[in-house]
Length: 72
Image (tube, rainbow, N blue to C red; front, side, top):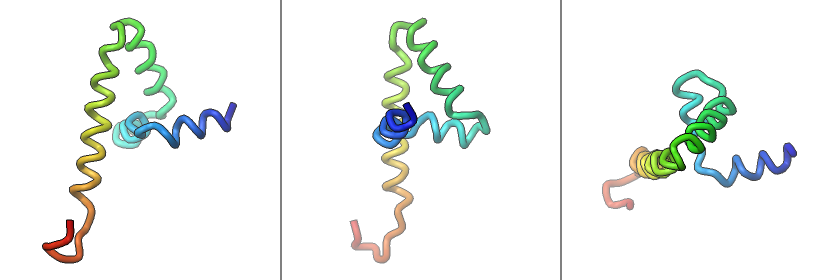
């Protein structure tokens, strides 16, 4: 079970882990809340999850330090 959990967490975007670090809450409770809310609202938080994943990816690339102005 731990192997499956590690595989899913390493392949996922890490949105729940990032929210857990920022808010000081365990990421497992955020994941459970996300699952429950997704069932209650027929999956609409999935869109929020993908928007947050996209924003995390964009901000990661914007924060990357460049050695010169010409580096892309």
